[in-house]
Image (tube, rainbow, N blue to C red; front, side, top):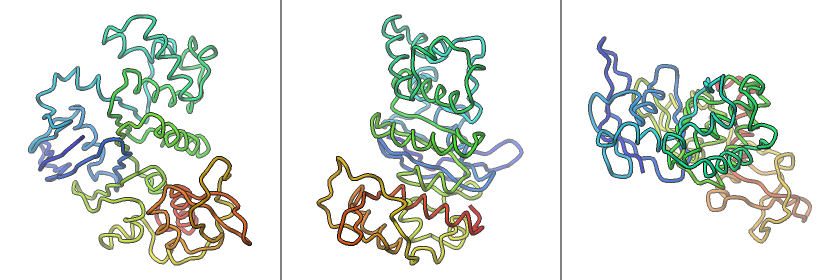
Amino acid sequence: MIKFSNVSKRYSDGTHAVNDLDLEIEDGEIFVLIGPSGCGKTTTLKMMNRLIDVTDGTIFVDGKEISNYDIHELRWEIGYVLQQIALFPHMTIEENIAVVPEMKKWGREKTRSRVDELLKMVGLDPVVYRTRKPDELSGGQQQRIGVARALAADPRLILMDEPFSALDPISREKLQDDILDLQRTIKKTIVFVTHDMQEALKLGDRICIMKEGKIVQVGTAQEIIESPANEFVKEFVGIEGRLDERVDLEPLVESSVGHDTSDSPVSAVSSLKLVLEALSRKDELPVEKDGQIIGMINRQKIVQHLAERMQERGQGL
Protein backbone atom coordinates (compact mmCIF):
# COMPACT_ATOMS: atom_id res chain seq x y z
CA MET A 1 0.00 0.00 0.00
CA ILE A 2 2.81 2.45 0.93
CA LYS A 3 6.19 2.43 -0.76
CA PHE A 4 9.23 4.63 -0.15
CA SER A 5 11.67 4.69 -3.05
CA ASN A 6 15.07 6.30 -2.34
CA VAL A 7 13.42 8.91 -0.11
CA SER A 8 15.56 11.54 1.58
CA LYS A 9 14.82 14.66 3.59
CA ARG A 10 17.44 17.37 3.92
CA TYR A 11 16.97 20.69 5.67
CA SER A 12 18.51 24.00 4.66
CA ASP A 13 21.16 23.74 7.40
CA GLY A 14 22.42 20.53 5.76
CA THR A 15 20.82 18.13 8.27
CA HIS A 16 19.87 14.76 6.77
CA ALA A 17 16.74 13.79 8.72
CA VAL A 18 16.07 10.80 6.43
CA ASN A 19 18.63 9.35 4.07
CA ASP A 20 17.82 7.19 1.01
CA LEU A 21 14.91 5.28 2.52
CA ASP A 22 13.55 2.20 0.73
CA LEU A 23 10.54 0.74 2.51
CA GLU A 24 7.25 -1.03 1.85
CA ILE A 25 4.33 -1.08 4.30
CA GLU A 26 1.73 -3.76 3.70
CA ASP A 27 -2.05 -3.44 3.71
CA GLY A 28 -3.68 -4.10 7.07
CA GLU A 29 -0.54 -4.24 9.23
CA ILE A 30 0.55 -2.28 12.27
CA PHE A 31 3.98 -1.03 11.19
CA VAL A 32 6.04 0.50 13.99
CA LEU A 33 8.84 3.04 13.49
CA ILE A 34 11.26 3.19 16.42
CA GLY A 35 14.73 4.47 17.16
CA PRO A 36 16.68 6.99 19.25
CA SER A 37 15.65 10.64 19.32
CA GLY A 38 16.50 12.34 16.04
CA CYS A 39 16.63 9.10 14.04
CA GLY A 40 14.03 10.33 11.50
CA LYS A 41 11.00 8.29 12.53
CA THR A 42 8.57 11.22 12.91
CA THR A 43 9.90 12.86 9.74
CA THR A 44 9.23 9.58 7.90
CA LEU A 45 5.68 9.51 9.25
CA LYS A 46 4.93 13.13 8.36
CA MET A 47 6.18 12.74 4.80
CA MET A 48 3.36 10.24 4.20
CA ASN A 49 0.66 12.90 4.48
CA ARG A 50 2.86 15.71 3.13
CA LEU A 51 3.14 17.61 6.40
CA ILE A 52 6.84 17.47 5.49
CA ASP A 53 7.92 17.52 1.85
CA VAL A 54 10.30 14.93 0.40
CA THR A 55 13.66 16.32 -0.78
CA ASP A 56 14.57 13.36 -3.02
CA GLY A 57 12.85 10.14 -4.02
CA THR A 58 9.18 9.19 -4.17
CA ILE A 59 6.46 7.94 -1.84
CA PHE A 60 3.63 5.92 -3.37
CA VAL A 61 0.20 5.25 -1.83
CA ASP A 62 -1.73 2.54 -3.68
CA GLY A 63 0.76 2.81 -6.54
CA LYS A 64 0.23 6.55 -7.01
CA GLU A 65 2.82 9.19 -6.14
CA ILE A 66 1.60 11.23 -3.20
CA SER A 67 2.62 14.42 -5.04
CA ASN A 68 -0.10 13.60 -7.59
CA TYR A 69 -2.87 13.57 -4.98
CA ASP A 70 -4.83 16.69 -4.12
CA ILE A 71 -3.32 17.50 -0.73
CA HIS A 72 -6.72 17.93 0.99
CA GLU A 73 -8.07 14.66 -0.39
CA LEU A 74 -4.85 12.90 0.61
CA ARG A 75 -5.14 14.08 4.19
CA TRP A 76 -8.86 13.27 4.36
CA GLU A 77 -7.95 9.69 3.44
CA ILE A 78 -5.27 9.45 6.13
CA GLY A 79 -6.23 9.45 9.81
CA TYR A 80 -3.71 11.15 12.09
CA VAL A 81 -3.34 10.73 15.87
CA LEU A 82 -0.82 12.84 17.79
CA GLN A 83 0.67 12.71 21.28
CA GLN A 84 -1.08 16.00 22.04
CA ILE A 85 -4.45 15.18 20.58
CA ALA A 86 -5.51 18.83 20.13
CA LEU A 87 -9.27 18.41 20.26
CA PHE A 88 -11.15 21.63 19.55
CA PRO A 89 -11.98 22.84 23.09
CA HIS A 90 -15.11 24.81 22.16
CA MET A 91 -16.67 21.88 20.26
CA THR A 92 -18.54 18.91 21.68
CA ILE A 93 -17.12 15.40 21.28
CA GLU A 94 -19.62 14.75 18.49
CA GLU A 95 -18.52 17.90 16.66
CA ASN A 96 -14.84 17.01 17.07
CA ILE A 97 -15.32 13.56 15.55
CA ALA A 98 -17.50 14.93 12.74
CA VAL A 99 -14.94 17.45 11.38
CA VAL A 100 -13.75 15.44 8.35
CA PRO A 101 -17.15 13.90 7.48
CA GLU A 102 -18.60 17.43 7.40
CA MET A 103 -15.75 18.61 5.18
CA LYS A 104 -16.61 15.72 2.87
CA LYS A 105 -20.25 16.90 2.96
CA TRP A 106 -21.75 13.82 4.54
CA GLY A 107 -25.42 14.12 5.47
CA ARG A 108 -26.38 14.87 9.06
CA GLU A 109 -27.87 11.44 9.80
CA LYS A 110 -24.94 9.57 8.25
CA THR A 111 -22.49 11.66 10.28
CA ARG A 112 -24.40 11.23 13.54
CA SER A 113 -24.66 7.49 12.99
CA ARG A 114 -20.90 7.30 12.32
CA VAL A 115 -20.11 9.28 15.48
CA ASP A 116 -22.21 6.91 17.60
CA GLU A 117 -20.63 3.88 15.93
CA LEU A 118 -17.11 5.16 16.62
CA LEU A 119 -17.81 6.12 20.23
CA LYS A 120 -19.03 2.59 20.86
CA MET A 121 -16.01 1.22 19.01
CA VAL A 122 -13.59 3.03 21.34
CA GLY A 123 -15.55 2.05 24.45
CA LEU A 124 -17.43 5.29 25.20
CA ASP A 125 -21.21 5.45 25.53
CA PRO A 126 -22.58 7.90 22.88
CA VAL A 127 -25.44 8.97 25.13
CA VAL A 128 -22.98 9.95 27.88
CA TYR A 129 -20.13 11.43 25.85
CA ARG A 130 -21.61 12.84 22.63
CA THR A 131 -22.40 16.28 24.06
CA ARG A 132 -19.45 16.63 26.44
CA LYS A 133 -16.55 19.01 25.88
CA PRO A 134 -12.91 17.83 25.79
CA ASP A 135 -12.04 19.36 29.19
CA GLU A 136 -14.64 17.06 30.79
CA LEU A 137 -12.66 13.97 29.71
CA SER A 138 -9.57 12.29 31.15
CA GLY A 139 -6.37 12.09 29.13
CA GLY A 140 -7.08 8.50 28.15
CA GLN A 141 -10.63 9.37 27.08
CA GLN A 142 -9.34 12.27 24.98
CA GLN A 143 -6.94 9.91 23.20
CA ARG A 144 -9.86 7.58 22.48
CA ILE A 145 -11.68 10.52 20.88
CA GLY A 146 -8.53 11.24 18.89
CA VAL A 147 -8.57 7.69 17.55
CA ALA A 148 -12.30 7.97 16.78
CA ARG A 149 -11.73 11.26 14.94
CA ALA A 150 -8.92 9.69 12.89
CA LEU A 151 -11.30 6.87 11.88
CA ALA A 152 -14.29 9.12 11.19
CA ALA A 153 -14.18 9.15 7.37
CA ASP A 154 -13.12 5.48 7.25
CA PRO A 155 -9.54 6.04 5.97
CA ARG A 156 -7.46 3.05 4.94
CA LEU A 157 -4.30 4.49 6.51
CA ILE A 158 -3.83 5.79 10.04
CA LEU A 159 -0.68 7.56 11.25
CA MET A 160 -0.03 7.55 15.00
CA ASP A 161 2.82 9.69 16.35
CA GLU A 162 3.66 8.59 19.92
CA PRO A 163 -0.05 8.81 20.78
CA PHE A 164 0.15 7.25 24.25
CA SER A 165 3.50 8.54 25.53
CA ALA A 166 2.00 11.33 27.68
CA LEU A 167 -0.38 8.96 29.51
CA ASP A 168 0.12 7.19 32.81
CA PRO A 169 1.27 3.53 32.54
CA ILE A 170 -2.15 2.02 33.29
CA SER A 171 -3.99 4.17 30.72
CA ARG A 172 -1.22 3.55 28.20
CA GLU A 173 -1.36 -0.23 28.53
CA LYS A 174 -5.17 -0.19 28.30
CA LEU A 175 -5.09 1.86 25.08
CA GLN A 176 -2.44 -0.43 23.60
CA ASP A 177 -4.74 -3.39 24.27
CA ASP A 178 -7.66 -1.46 22.81
CA ILE A 179 -5.75 -0.70 19.59
CA LEU A 180 -4.95 -4.40 19.15
CA ASP A 181 -8.59 -5.35 19.77
CA LEU A 182 -9.82 -2.60 17.44
CA GLN A 183 -7.42 -3.61 14.68
CA ARG A 184 -8.84 -7.13 14.64
CA THR A 185 -12.16 -5.53 13.64
CA ILE A 186 -11.20 -2.60 11.40
CA LYS A 187 -8.13 -4.09 9.61
CA LYS A 188 -6.57 -0.70 8.86
CA THR A 189 -3.00 -0.01 7.85
CA ILE A 190 -1.48 1.70 10.89
CA VAL A 191 1.94 3.36 10.97
CA PHE A 192 2.88 3.88 14.61
CA VAL A 193 5.84 5.94 15.91
CA THR A 194 7.18 5.21 19.38
CA HIS A 195 10.39 5.50 21.38
CA ASP A 196 9.34 2.62 23.65
CA MET A 197 10.60 -0.84 22.65
CA GLN A 198 8.08 -2.57 24.88
CA GLU A 199 5.27 -0.80 23.03
CA ALA A 200 6.81 -1.66 19.65
CA LEU A 201 7.14 -5.34 20.51
CA LYS A 202 3.57 -5.49 21.77
CA LEU A 203 1.87 -3.66 18.89
CA GLY A 204 3.93 -4.19 15.77
CA ASP A 205 3.18 -6.77 13.12
CA ARG A 206 6.53 -5.50 11.82
CA ILE A 207 9.01 -3.13 13.40
CA CYS A 208 11.40 -0.74 11.62
CA ILE A 209 14.41 0.26 13.74
CA MET A 210 16.04 3.49 12.56
CA LYS A 211 19.32 5.23 13.37
CA GLU A 212 20.62 8.54 12.00
CA GLY A 213 17.98 8.71 9.26
CA LYS A 214 18.55 5.19 7.98
CA ILE A 215 16.87 1.82 8.41
CA VAL A 216 18.89 -0.60 10.52
CA GLN A 217 16.45 -3.53 10.54
CA VAL A 218 12.86 -4.31 9.56
CA GLY A 219 11.15 -7.45 10.80
CA THR A 220 8.60 -9.03 13.08
CA ALA A 221 9.14 -8.90 16.83
CA GLN A 222 10.24 -12.51 16.68
CA GLU A 223 12.73 -11.87 13.85
CA ILE A 224 14.27 -8.90 15.64
CA ILE A 225 14.45 -10.71 18.97
CA GLU A 226 15.92 -13.90 17.50
CA SER A 227 18.10 -12.40 14.73
CA PRO A 228 19.17 -8.82 15.54
CA ALA A 229 20.96 -7.28 12.55
CA ASN A 230 23.93 -5.90 14.49
CA GLU A 231 25.23 -4.81 17.88
CA PHE A 232 23.20 -1.59 17.80
CA VAL A 233 19.94 -3.57 17.51
CA LYS A 234 21.04 -6.00 20.24
CA GLU A 235 21.80 -3.11 22.57
CA PHE A 236 18.72 -1.08 21.63
CA VAL A 237 16.32 -3.99 22.05
CA GLY A 238 18.20 -5.55 24.94
CA ILE A 239 17.43 -9.17 24.08
CA GLU A 240 20.80 -10.92 24.35
CA GLY A 241 20.63 -14.05 26.50
CA ARG A 242 16.88 -13.82 27.17
CA LEU A 243 15.47 -16.33 24.67
CA ASP A 244 16.90 -19.43 26.31
CA GLU A 245 15.33 -18.60 29.67
CA ARG A 246 12.60 -20.98 30.78
CA VAL A 247 9.53 -19.13 31.99
CA ASP A 248 6.28 -20.00 33.70
CA LEU A 249 3.54 -19.28 31.15
CA GLU A 250 0.65 -19.80 33.55
CA PRO A 251 0.38 -16.10 34.59
CA LEU A 252 0.33 -15.13 30.90
CA VAL A 253 -2.40 -17.42 29.58
CA GLU A 254 -5.91 -16.32 28.67
CA SER A 255 -9.09 -18.36 28.91
CA SER A 256 -9.43 -21.12 26.34
CA VAL A 257 -13.24 -20.82 26.26
CA GLY A 258 -14.35 -20.36 22.66
CA HIS A 259 -10.84 -21.01 21.29
CA ASP A 260 -9.50 -23.91 19.24
CA THR A 261 -7.48 -26.11 21.61
CA SER A 262 -6.82 -28.91 19.10
CA ASP A 263 -3.29 -27.76 18.22
CA SER A 264 -0.31 -29.36 19.95
CA PRO A 265 0.06 -27.53 23.26
CA VAL A 266 3.19 -25.96 24.70
CA SER A 267 4.28 -26.78 28.20
CA ALA A 268 3.43 -24.35 30.98
CA VAL A 269 7.18 -24.07 31.64
CA SER A 270 9.02 -23.50 28.37
CA SER A 271 11.84 -21.47 26.87
CA LEU A 272 10.85 -18.23 25.17
CA LYS A 273 12.59 -19.37 21.99
CA LEU A 274 10.55 -22.57 21.82
CA VAL A 275 7.25 -20.75 22.37
CA LEU A 276 8.04 -18.06 19.78
CA GLU A 277 8.99 -20.72 17.23
CA ALA A 278 5.66 -22.48 17.86
CA LEU A 279 3.76 -19.18 17.56
CA SER A 280 5.40 -18.42 14.21
CA ARG A 281 2.96 -20.93 12.72
CA LYS A 282 -0.16 -20.01 14.74
CA ASP A 283 -1.75 -16.87 16.18
CA GLU A 284 -2.25 -18.62 19.51
CA LEU A 285 -1.61 -22.01 21.09
CA PRO A 286 -3.00 -23.98 24.04
CA VAL A 287 -0.85 -24.28 27.16
CA GLU A 288 -0.67 -27.58 29.04
CA LYS A 289 0.09 -28.26 32.68
CA ASP A 290 -0.08 -31.69 34.32
CA GLY A 291 -1.87 -33.06 31.26
CA GLN A 292 -4.59 -30.38 31.29
CA ILE A 293 -5.14 -27.36 29.02
CA ILE A 294 -4.96 -24.31 31.29
CA GLY A 295 -5.48 -21.59 28.67
CA MET A 296 -4.16 -19.96 25.49
CA ILE A 297 -0.96 -18.03 24.79
CA ASN A 298 -0.30 -15.58 21.94
CA ARG A 299 2.70 -13.69 20.55
CA GLN A 300 1.73 -10.37 22.13
CA LYS A 301 1.77 -11.90 25.60
CA ILE A 302 5.21 -13.43 25.07
CA VAL A 303 6.89 -10.36 23.63
CA GLN A 304 5.28 -8.14 26.26
CA HIS A 305 6.59 -10.44 28.97
CA LEU A 306 10.06 -10.40 27.42
CA ALA A 307 10.03 -6.61 27.14
CA GLU A 308 8.93 -6.20 30.76
CA ARG A 309 11.66 -8.57 31.98
CA MET A 310 14.32 -6.65 30.07
CA GLN A 311 12.99 -3.34 31.37
CA GLU A 312 13.04 -4.59 34.97
CA ARG A 313 16.68 -5.64 34.58
CA GLY A 314 17.78 -2.29 33.21
CA GLN A 315 18.42 -3.44 29.67
CA GLY A 316 17.86 0.00 28.15
CA LEU A 317 14.33 -0.14 26.87
